[in-house]
Image (cartoon, rainbow, N blue to C red):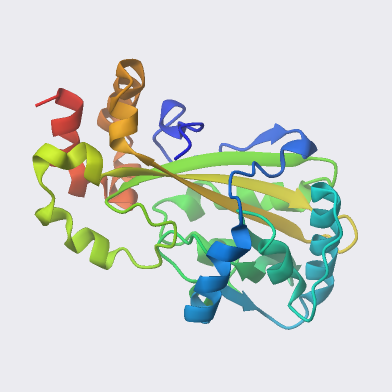
Length: 268
C-alpha cells in the first residue's frame, strides 16, 4: 500500500498527462526484493511476464548499463537477456520501445504486474496497436504520443500516472475475467475492504546510444478502506468517480463497481 499517488485528483479522462521529473526520480523503490516476487512468476508463467524480439539486445544492454548506473552498483546479466536482468533489480516493469520502420514498436518487456494483458500478447505491437482498446486514442492522442517519442531527449525524464478500480489486491493481473466474475459475490457492507485502487506510475526515458525509449510501469495497490479513512481524500475520490469522463468509465469498466462504491462514498 502506498497512498503516495492519487491520480484521480488530477483528471478522470483520457489524456497524455506527461510531466518532466528529475532523472534521479526514475525509480521509487519500495519493494524489498523485486527478484523474489518476479522469479516465481517467470518460472510459472514465462510467456505472460517476459518476451523479446530479434534485434533488441543492443538496446537491452544499454538499458542494463544505464539502470546499473542509476542504482549505483554493477549488474551482470549472467546469461539472462539484459532487460530481464535489469527488471529483476527494480520493482517496476520495463518495456523497451524502438523505432522500426515508421512505427515505434515494443521490442522487449518484463511484465510482472500487467494490468489485463500479457507480454506474449503485446510484444512487437506499435503504439497504435498497443492503445487500440482505448476509445478515441488513435484519433485524439496517437500523433501527439508519437511526437513525444520522436522528440524525447536523453536528458529528459517524463512521468504520468493513471488509475482504475478492481476487486483484487494482486499485482499480477493478466486477465480481468475471474476478477469481474466475482463482483456479484462481494458483500456491500464490506465493499471498502474488497475494492482496491490500482494505480500505475509510468516513466519515459531515451537511451542515448541506441535511441530506444524505456517505458517503466510501477503498480501500486491501495485498498479503498485506506482512502475512505481520510474524509478529505475520500471526498476527492468521490468527486472523480462521479465526474469521470464517459469514455474513461467505459474503458475502465467502472460501472461494474458503481453500487459498491456508492456504499463507501455515501457511508451507508
